[in-house]
Image (cartoon, rainbow over all chains, first blue to last red; front, side):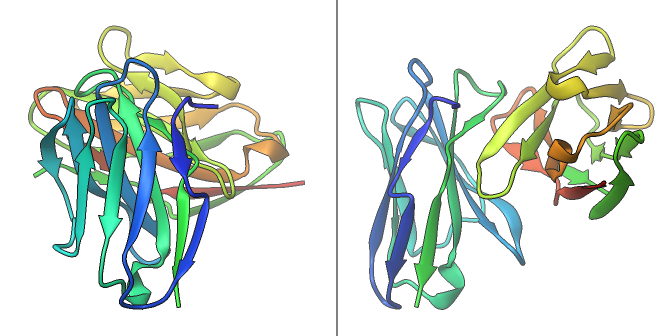
Length: 112
Length: 113
């Protein structure tokens, strides 16, 4: 158990819909990272927050957004969902920039 | 731009045989290096890390890796694999002046009984 929690575990929704994925980092970790893992794209970095502020952006689509709240939990919002958005979405946290990341169990999103 | 290359997408190996999973990175500055393991239907778990100091790093489950600065490599090794080592292995790099991790495409290790 990494100490990072993600909800929900599974999510099935239809194209065009909007969903919110939630992540709680390990106690004391200020950085939260979001990743998308799919069979054809591998593990793709989406976005990082540090203590509430956006820190780095990766291959995140404009239809996706994220935020980190004062209690340090983070949410990833995916809108206008397409079939190709079906993937595993991982959250990770670290104590500081550059330190090892601890991954949550992931949310499996299926868009039908 | 940084990049991480895992040359072998799939590595089959017999039980109790040694294994090496290769990782090369591109960076002209100092880096932190990591290996993660992902078991089926689970998240990524840290196997080992190199931040500084000794170039030979020991991790969990009997794995070790060696940082070679001149060859910009960080290969993962285990002298004798078990069935339970069957998993996906990811190499990752963090440029220690930055805040973004770069992951390789992963190597699927299959241990054959």
